Image 1: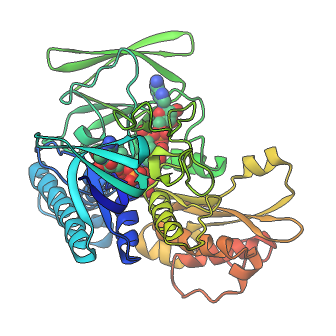
Image 2: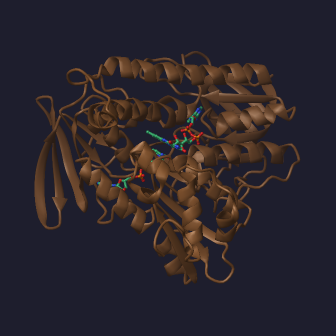
Image 3: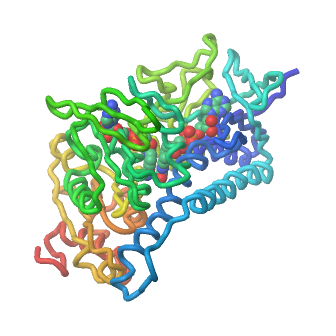
Length: 476
Ligand code: FAD
Ligand code: NAD
């Protein structure tokens, strides 16, 4: 007899493991199946985010930031370092691995504490809510049945024609988080979020980094003013971003990667020690659904779901990167919690219109809500406020004067429609803007709230004042 669960979750990334823990908290008998195997050959819960995404990339961003500040910025504080700072890349990578292990081990512990049955295996949805599990380590398959199945199988990197990953010279995000010595030159295909973050890591450590971006616009999803300000800073840092650059092919010859790309009507050749391909991710549905299980896909290969994450089969749900919406860890986690609560009879809601985005470069870039170009396209009448970091005492004290806050509010009602930040700690500053938007607040609300002095949050406060032309520390 097959084991029977109330809930079986497929995938233990931030969408799946969170859903499993919440379901178990609600008293549901829950199993979570995951097939991730690291480059070290070991099984590990946590999905892309914890193993080869959010967390390891932030660990390397922090290490490389300290290194760059030590070499370039500490002298202005009067801090002297004898000789030139050195980076021990294997130690940096080992630190990152330690953080990953701590967090992925933490999920195992949380599963145990909450009574979730964690299974390292590949799950396949069969008809009648049966899940077939193939153990990662090999061996016989087993079948389990469930009243509810939550599909949280995540996403995988997209490959482009004529550029084949070899995991050594032509690499994806996992490879770029595991390089054991700084390459002299790193090519990156795609100046999106991964390209900018991981490109920044290796540039700070001394690599000459060139990003080849197909689009003519830089960071097209961001507000134009913010993207422009960020681009200016990246240029100062000598991150070489080539826009309108279409890669035609890449091949490894004698331990180097030769890349051919077109820009306008010209064809160019470039040679790099390593090539990171970061052109987006696609939903992971490999060997996930039997032909008779009834779960439908969209044209883009995502699991088709409604606003409440229901698939085309009653009792089967889809959450996280494998369904529509932004491919962000926090979006997947909130969907996971909501689905678990819905299964238990609750009526939760996730508002996908108010999901913050953060790019963890230096300066950081963060936004929530609509961009100015979107409001124009939608014909919305709006007012804009902005405030430069350079006019904020705390930013100057920190030596972080590059950046700005831009705020967009409805011209008639003053309801906050979008906030866009480029600058230090943008990742944290965006939180109060998210809260305000979620509570349908106005720019006036942020303008009337007492903000501690001196903090970077004063830039948010001043941008709110500036929507009404009454900023104090800049000329309106
Ligand atoms: P995943 O995390 O991809 O997890 C899915 C899991 O399911 C995987 O372990 C996979 O092996 C497993 N699986 C797939 N199919 C099966 C199957 N059939 N059976 C069993 N298991 C299966 N997002 C942020 O919000 N902030 C960041 O700072 C951030 N940084 C990132 C940096 C990088 C380099 C990358 C690549 C991504 C980053 N992301 C970030 C995106 C974030 O990682 C994803 O949005 C998030 O991991 C999606 O969560 P998920 O649970 O849907 O899927
Ligand atoms: P992305 O969509 O952010 O960027 C991909 C870039 O590649 C785009 O600018 C696109 O125009 C460009 N591109 C596509 N095809 C190309 C080609 N043939 N040649 C040159 N350029 C090409 O995707 P990503 O950077 O791979 O990241 C994937 C996803 O992972 C992100 O969209 C995001 O959802 C998530 N992520 C989030 C964070 C974060 O939250 N800080 C960090 C990393 C990744």
